[in-house]
Image 1 (spheres, helix red, strand yellow):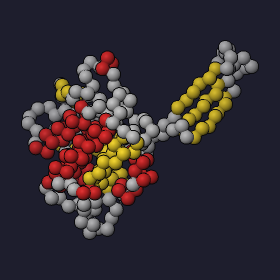
Image 2 (cartoon, rainbow, N blue to C red):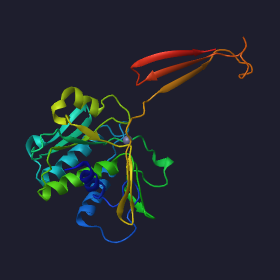
Image 3 (tube, rainbow, N blue to C red):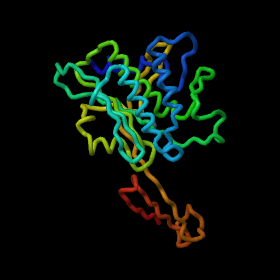
Image 4 (cartoon, protein in one colour):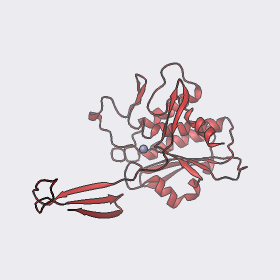
Amino acid sequence: MTLRRLLLVLISGLAPVGARAQASGPLAAHQQLARDIYKELVEINTTTDANPGGTTQAAEAMAARLRAAGFAGADVQVLASGPRDGNLVARLRGSGVAGRKPILLLAHLDVVAALREDWSIDPFTFTEKDGYYYGRGTGDDKAMAAIFMANMIRMKREGFVPDRDLILALTADEEGGDHNGVEWLLANKRELVDAAYALNEGGGGFLKNGKPFVQNVQAAEKVYYDFTFEVRNKGGHSSRRSRTTPFIDYRMRWRASRSTTFRYR
Ligand SMILES: [Zn+2]
């Protein structure tokens, strides 16, 4: 399958891409499937703190759907990257005729915390209202996971054989936590996810009148930083450097593994 064809297949799996709902009319069977998966994923609380084990629950639910669609044996696996952190890896076998490495479809299952009192609705009840979907993870990243899932199932059911393998990985601890699924898979199960390249969140697409209109591609990834600011005395006029102007340590931590301290006087 060419990349263009793949992208069109992927974005046509669910009428909306992201949290925008279809305006009206009944959904086609494959769209209904995507919506059902989307709902199921949003309603499984996968916040690491509030529901440890949530990503395992979600990964198992997705594995059950894939097995029911005909994926078997080692082509669908739930793997633990930590005590309560489940990751799904599934493979649609290609013909291999082109001799090319697989394409990896990558999305994360976990979501950041959502407190009921901060929301006007229950964040873990999938809600469609005024043309939009509401619920924790509707945008980040369960729409993507649902679209990938629905397309894997649809391709399997229709007997579609791509010219290379397609791998789906739905992972834990992308938003935080100590057991990042992608890192764990690369370190421990590289053969399951080894690919020519991966399609991951960060771009996004839009439909216009029900047709693919824009597909953004994010070609590089942002890097995470924490900053700690320390004021060492009560200060003076900050725009005029003098002995009374406080100096500030900019203490930068990069994923808590690399540490650099800059001093600014
Ligand atoms: Zn995300």
